[in-house]
Structures are given as structure tokens and as C-alpha cells.
Image 1 (cartoon, helix red, strand yellow):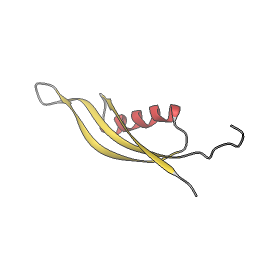
Image 2 (cartoon, rainbow, N blue to C red; image 1 turned 30 degrees about the horizontal axis):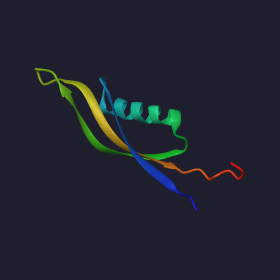
Image 3 (cartoon, rainbow, N blue to C red; image 1 turned 135 degrees about the horizontal axis):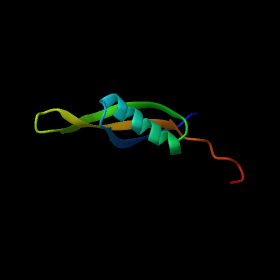
Image 4 (cartoon, rainbow, N blue to C red; image 1 turned 120 degrees about the vertical axis):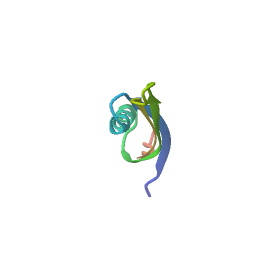
Amino acid sequence: MAISKTIRLSGGSSDSIEDAIRTVLARAAVTIRDISRFRVVEVGGKVDSAGVPTNFEVTVDITFNVREAIQGE
């Protein structure tokens, strides 16, 4: 039976919401194996004095499979 775990991560981008999501997922993939899905929990950002977005921020739930223990370790 496969077991999965979900963690919550946040990150941002000055380009777009999509880029912020890709950045979070790519950074997570450096240390987490078997990422199987994600869900955007929150989207926000910062704007300048003219109301133009200057930074996009996302909070993402990332789900990955828990690996089986290796015998003898």
C-alpha cells in the first residue's frame, strides 16, 4: 500500500503566478523525490504605488510518495 505525505511550501516570483508555482515545485524537487501532485492554497503579492503587481507569491501543498524502508538500514 502506497503512503503519501503532503507539505506546505511558499515562494514567489517577480514574473507571474505560474512562474512562482514552477519555482516552488522546482526547489522542492531538489530535495524531495516522487512529487505526485500539488494544490495552490493561496495566491497573493505586492503592488507598487500605481497598483501594478511587482511580486507574485503562492502557497502550495505538495504531495509525494513515502518511500519504503530498506531492510538492514
